[in-house]
Image (cartoon, rainbow, N blue to C red):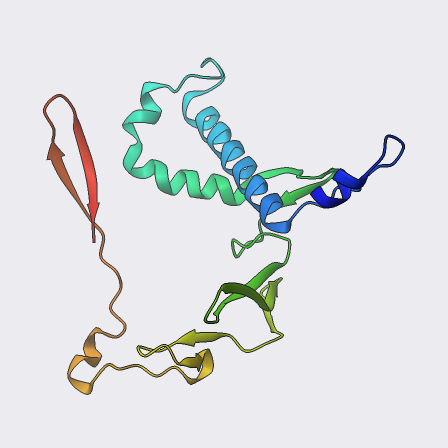
Amino acid sequence: MWDEYKECTDGCSVKFVPRNSVVDAMQAVLSAATAIRNYRLEVCGEQVEEHEVCTEMLRMRKDGNIALERHVGMSTTLRVGDKQDSFSFTKQGHGDTSVQLLNVRRSETRVTLQKSGSFHKGHTTVAVPAITYGHRGEEIPINQLRSECTIACSHCQYRPLAMVTVGRKYPSTSSAQSVQ
């Protein structure tokens, strides 16, 4: 687009075509901001100024993440780049637009992104099999990956991640830190 713009004379115009990744990031920020506003209204009510947070919202930090996630899922916003349409999430938590699945490919001189498929309305479409790399740099198709887990450690295979919050005192403030 920049090359077209440089060559453009006073009378011509260059059509702007936004990148999907930029539009998706903007849509995510808009959805998150809408969720924060709606959560603040639910907890604090209408009496709080636009830029303020009520003390009740600060007290609910532990449960606030769950509530905020719920509000993100329920948010409906204008679609970025199309003010006549709205954006919302499905009941499964997916955006209502298709997502490109990209595979990182490398050569001796560079790394490139290759479109390997898409995800839309709960369905995955594969255009090109995804590739990963082994310990020695060899290409391995994703569908040929095998676990190196032995029978002795197989009990760990399906263990859920355990998140622990540990309080830590700092000189003038207190904070919490997540440890995995």
